[in-house]
Image (cartoon, rainbow, N blue to C red; front, side):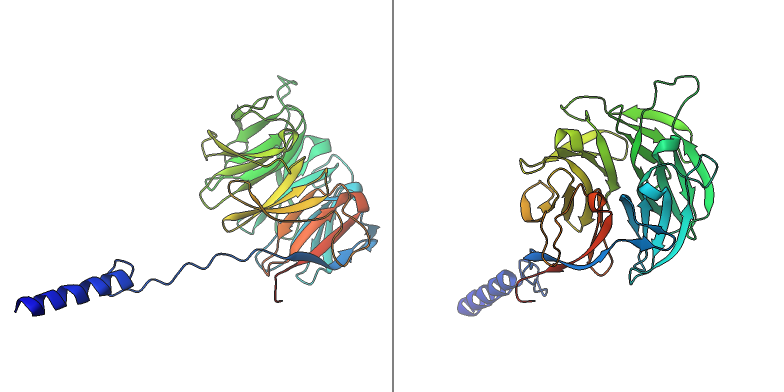
Length: 319
């Protein structure tokens, strides 16, 4: 009896160990995400796009169906591309009236329905619907305090409707409530903690945190949804990180000064980098301004200094 009990206990221990400590459930080993081996240019979009030649494209926004909207800043217009990167709609044009633009830059989508556009030259953030028809705007100036706001750059949205607008000139972030009324400022000129210097693109993650490209300080700054400083993401390789895109637990970071694309972990460790010269293209990246990760894992880059869009395939060893 004692021998049988001993044998049973040994068998039970073997089962628990082999099942990762949970009886009856075998855990598979976690497979680490692959690290890219190269970026190869699949296509370059330049020259005439619909009625005008592409001129200093800046902001990018990607829909889940693969469509992309580009802020063609030099032509003060928005251009929508289908999933195959052929253009089908353009809206805007230079002006101050509703629906017109003056140097549009960063873009953000709201639940696939609304597109928010930083209209830098008109001191506002304009909202357009999915067909790029003008809806309304958030004014980025105060007639009672002309020194309150500077130059709008990146824009992001909270899940409950707040709008965060980066102020490149004043080194801060202005937060507006869900009906477009100014609420408060976060950040200030400087380096320590949540201070900022020339903030650019803002991106929200699945946890509701805001990742700000604190480009003048050569880093990213992370705030929680309430605007509290959480941490910084820094690497000596960064010079002017102007844009980022979230890829699960990793970050694609675009450096405008170096013309380099980095893939980093959440602590800022570089896993992969490419540029300014990319496979498949004779022209190096020149003052790139934005990048987005498309649904099929293509990477699209606004190469502003070369007046083009660069569509890249992410390559891995063995492809």
